[in-house]
Length: 159
Image (cartoon, rainbow, N blue to C red; front, side, top):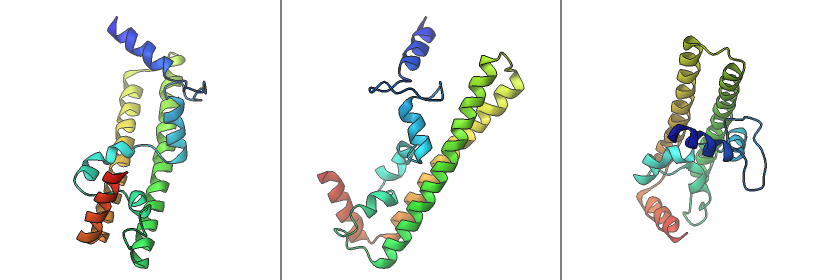
C-alpha cells in the first residue's frame, strides 16, 4: 500500500503547478527542463558549498563586489561554461535512459540484464554530474583569495 501511495504521489508530481506535462513520464516537468537546460543537480554540490567551495556561477554573480581580476573572471567563466556543457551532456543521457527504462517496462520487454545495465548507467550519470559540479567548486575555490572567499560568504549570507 505504501509503495502504491508513493508511486501515485510521484505520478501526480509529473505535472508542475502550471499544468505542464513532462515529455518523459518518469520525470517531473521541472526535472526534465533542468536536465534539458543544463541546470540539474546543483544540490549535488552541497558538500562542497557547505565547506567553502563555491560554484563558479555563484561567484561570478558577485564579480564586482569581490573585485575579481580579469584572469579570475576569465577562468571562472571558462569553468562555468564547461560545467554547463557537462550538465547538458549528462542531462541528455539521463533523459534518454529514463525514456528507455519507461519504454522497456511499458512494452513488457524488461529483463534482468537490461534492468542492471540501465540502472547502472543511471548511477554513472549521477556520479558524473556530481563529479562535474564538485570539480567546478574545487577549481573555483583555488582561484579565490581568502579575502575574496570571506567577502563571498558574507554576500551569500546577506541574500
